[in-house]
Length: 208
Image (cartoon, rainbow, N blue to C red; front, side):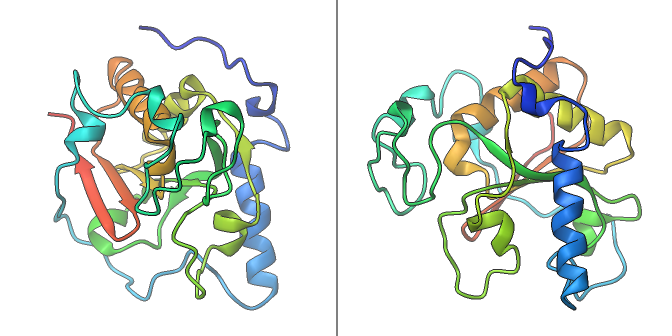
């Protein structure tokens, strides 16, 4: 399966693309005296700590587009008919929305390393923490809609930029599309590990 041209006009490389939108959010946070992306750790090691997430990464099983019909993709199990345009408790329909995709140097040292993690922040985190550091991204409707092919290309672009891994931040409410994008990226040469963060879970795919 090859990567086709993005069929979503909002994905095009332009001043309003995902990376630029993410930078606007970051600059706004810095102007207000905070940086939602900075960790308290400064140096990085090479260890990789993860658990397997076979429902997402293993072929022949796991989630399908039918999961959006009566959604139970997050622990809230709201049963929203997201495939029909309804919004779940995450605030999202079945169309993936990405708020930021860029090299990220402020995760835990084993993830960021010296070159940075290829972070892809998804909109609509269902956890709704009162102390959320990424509120604009998680709950503010920030971001642009993307197709699986565009998401796969983001991963490949981040690896080209030197990312040590692809870091998917709260993506499981879009699990069917994310799964498709991961396999598509692998088929087109993605070789770095996939790190997945979602509602207390961190998982990874080493590409083995």
